[in-house]
Image (cartoon, rainbow over all chains, first blue to last red; front, side, top):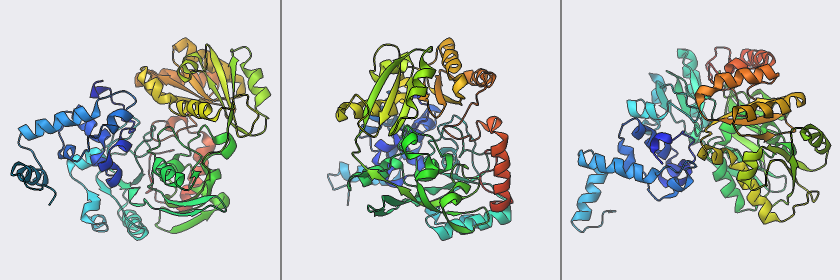
Length: 100
Length: 385
């Protein structure tokens, strides 16, 4: 189902651990989908856990994880990355532990 | 703005993206706020309210933003994200109460309570809704016949009025805040009723037609142990697996019902809770309720049939729900409900979407409460107004 069908119910939010811990609306999958519907990419797409639970919770069957992943890919191609993300990837590419 | 300095830098947002993120809820309304603050304790909240009074700024409390009437959406307002009040405190198993912060989602509360064998009984359609949000809107749920509404499950609550005065309200005084959608006080914590998680329920599933609906409902409503008496039209009955045609689903907290298989009963009730979402999938994405006298319930069902929209709801409480295909159908639907003698509202609060249908008695009571509690109209102006 296309993200344009989203009715902003917020049932997807409970499935995302980053949101569940922070309870920060900016990180809510619902909000990310809404921004993407409006063709606005947010760096908070990097915070989404993409664990499949938001997609599973969506009553309209919107592929929320795929939608957010596609936005991430767009941001990476456009060179818009968070500092933490860049550092994480640099360590990973060097074979170092990215969590340290 | 002094207001900003009251909370930590990470708890205040004024950049365009953040404001945009707090500019909506599940109602479809939107309004970009001027500032978002996330107070973490009572002292921060008190100082914010006092400062907002001095500057005459509108404060709009917000929980999870799952409301469908636009109660937490206001252009230019200061949004108070209440999810800093997220502690689940004392569980009193002897008296059956738990103390819980206003920012706790009811689903999370019930996960925590389940570990002790308890549950909060009034669960809304969306378990992401916060306790504070539910107390503000005083939603009717499928369990309300047995447990009452949110007034009835609150033993006491802690709140601030519009002048920043901290109060603990008990007994009838909780109704000065519960159900007023954040216009008469901002709840920080409540002591609410819990019940044992696996309470036994039995069901009765009665096929009905519009000709015997009233008679059937009348024969049921005085029975003991009723949890809910729910009307489901043919489309809803099919989604719930109740069989062909329309039905009344009667839920008892005793052995009166003929369906006693607990696993099956719970499956049906879980589906009933999810019925609005199942209908979204069918394309009926706009939830509209009507408060109806017994005499106009059948006419309302006929109206839904004529419009080709599904209809279900709380028969004994006189609140039925129709799900429309599109928001553009709302105005004509409201006109039809009023023509029947009903009121287009009564379950999900008024918010900013349904101000036109606030009964005069409610409006007058709010004016009196505002004089007592929020004379300068700082708290959520524009709701129930």
